Image (cartoon, rainbow over all chains, first blue to last red; front, side, top):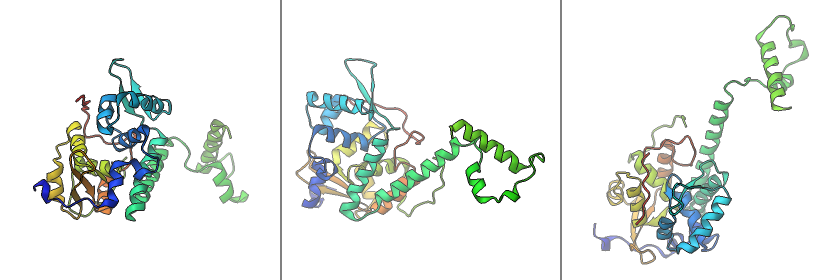
Length: 179
Length: 111
């Protein structure tokens, strides 16, 4: 298709290309840098590359990058001090929140539900991670068991039943976690 | 993340194409076309954005003419529900450590 055959971009969408998050945080250098790193978190960034994609000067980019390193949103790789490389901290909660914000910007404009889907995905991921980390923890907590079980239903402590084992495990877990 | 996801509605996309959709969504679903092409190039993703747009159709992805960007073209994800379902299917919707990265070889662009 020839370039001229493409339709004209609606005026209402122009600000979303020019300003990050539809202009919510203004037009500062750091906002542009954040917008780009949130969109592409698996990349290694150089000041020169950011200079190119944000259209800002290198002296303006450097303090923005230093701020983002201080905020733990970026890691600075010091392989060559002359050419620093920056990587996004994938464990950063700020990165996750900014990703949700990016989706929220579309949702408010288009009436879609990208953010809800992403939040749901995040919850599923958190549940999955919790389960994976709690591999050796007891399934039933002591507190939960005491709430649901009548005192008469407790077995004799000398029988060595599974409930007794769970109880002992829960007490041990509670002791470990400091409760 | 080892969560099972049912296959979304067609047109089908590859994981690399889903990564492009996720990238565009995080840029308010609209971006400079040349920037998007550069994203594909730097990651060595074998996705030609213009061919991808043609393959998916105007109802899913659209390219516009505009003077507000250097390349004079912008790309927009039109069907966000469809894009959402594919990015979720390939687990590229949200960033996390356990994410499957089909591209291990990073290349830092200097020019």
